[in-house]
Length: 322
Length: 267
Image 1 (tube, rainbow over the protein chains, first blue to last red):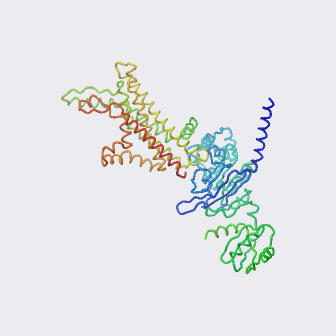
Image 2: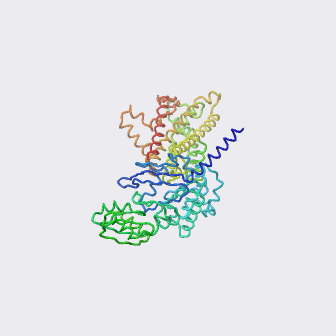
Image 3: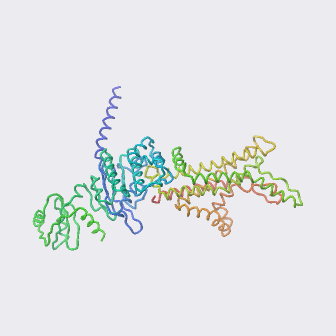
């Protein structure tokens, strides 16, 4: 009797501990993933960790490898090298059932109605049909639930895809360009919906080419271009207007080495005969100058520029395109 | 297993193209099986008029011959079902729903299994149709009926089931390989009716007799009728075990190749 009680107590405690651990649990960890199509490198040595409860944005222009990355971690595209782990393990069907995903374009049987399409997905995921009506109401498709998918507009198709991803209250949602093809009102509504889902504790991975979208919806971001991560971190840290400082000295590589030790440094990039560095926080040019001077470097060029995020993003992308 | 079959059913339940073709198949199969006798009778009426020797009446529907006769005839129409399978498989690729199915938690092998189950169900439906037709025809045409006579030779039905399943697995492989329905149907017809037939003549008989379409087709040989005997032609009225084994091996090969394709390719 006592032993039984003890065991049940212990079990409860284990469950509790597990739940607490889950708060900081890494759901998805991507490790040096690469994939090429012919000569084109779609994903190039990409690494990324996704922690529970956060909203991650993968930001990048078209063709930067967002969809390929998502396809790989969902097991529909085979990677050339690298690995990924879900909850520290290989991807299993059971995990896929608890991930709601949209990839690229809404994929449904065109001759089936909205409801029938969702029923097939519910069957695959081993969920009941009870929640289908409510989900259709949430995405504002309830009135068209018995219409065939092929009669839907792009916006409605996109909303049905979102409904499919929401089926069964998944722990994690992967949304690839979820606002593609929606009108401004639809875009705003979808973003609100995503935020609402996230506020309930669902982890979300959102791929988008819209800076504005990632800024509004995500807590973390990784900027991708040509399959490479340019940088990643907190949205507030990465995607805020910061100082960009141009510096140059006689020996650029030496300068680069030393300046990389500078505190609060966000990124360094080369441009012709100078370095462009981004600094977060309130550091100013004076601090940087004296830091470098103390290290024995005399600058030949120093100029500070405040840049809007948009132009910085574009610049960053065009730089890497060279 | 039931779940996979249910999913397959959900996919086709309101799909008109499928049901029209499926219905057409059974209509044609029914007409041919029930109508061949009267066609042959018509034919013989003319032949007898000019024939110097008496020609015996041919009955296709006597137990136990009816089983070989109708399964042999039925074999000609399996191409209908093969086209259906090709359409259903390639649809999954052109709608890219295979991708969505997998993302939602169906494994690649489950996906293959669901298609195999579907193929088996369709083959079984056709076999049952022939069984019922055979019973009706046999009971109405055989003068002296005994239980052993009725069920003697019903093994032809099982062989017919294998014949369909093997051929439909081949169609499935082509669907998975080509992915575009029009193109896949073209290749299926071209290979089954033209390319392999040309190869039969180009390649020595010892080798070409083992080609897949030929092997599947000759599982059930042309039935011997008294007429054939008159002409001194003697076909096999039994099924060879070696043939069965070879066709079974082909079926496993088709399924295995489909599995490899599914596994290696990006979806």
